[in-house]
Length: 212
Image (cartoon, rainbow, N blue to C red; front, top):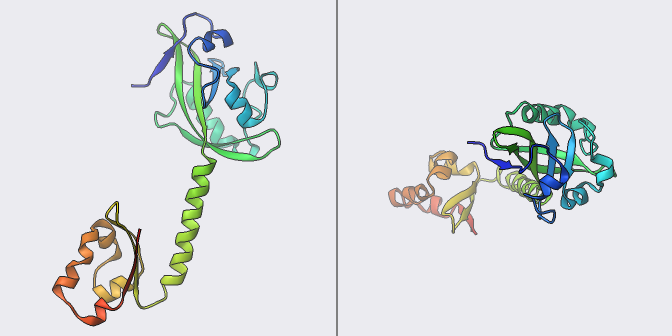
């Protein structure tokens, strides 16, 4: 069931929104009315896009923080919201600041109601730049690791000792141990099974691992 906030009035306005949303909430908050016009944003959101109420209040889509290159995706998401069918899992999009720089955001949308009547829509917006950079750095590190290890004959693996799972194993595992890499990802304990079955030194001495 999609959640909704209740507005204690039949008309949506900044004052009405502030009755249910603290202006100092540490997350970006944006509100549009049923017609899709900008009604409210908190200070946190304005700082996020480096703008102010005078640039947004009363304006309609496309808004100034929508990058031109991202318009098709954002407009489709906005259409879903205005027609009353926002994605329950939220959206991952890109917004832009007044200087033109772009940043990734994650947002979730809820209806604003007065009784059963929908007055507008409220989006909670989170800047996920740090998470995206961390994911990109991890992907780059994995790519470099693969470049180094995929062409050597020894088995190289990375094991997460806390999660008890294999994070990476190179292709030499399949050649030397006769099992698929995927089987090791699915069941890390399967790594010790061949050792119990066959204690040949050529296998035991051809494995190099990193345990985190």
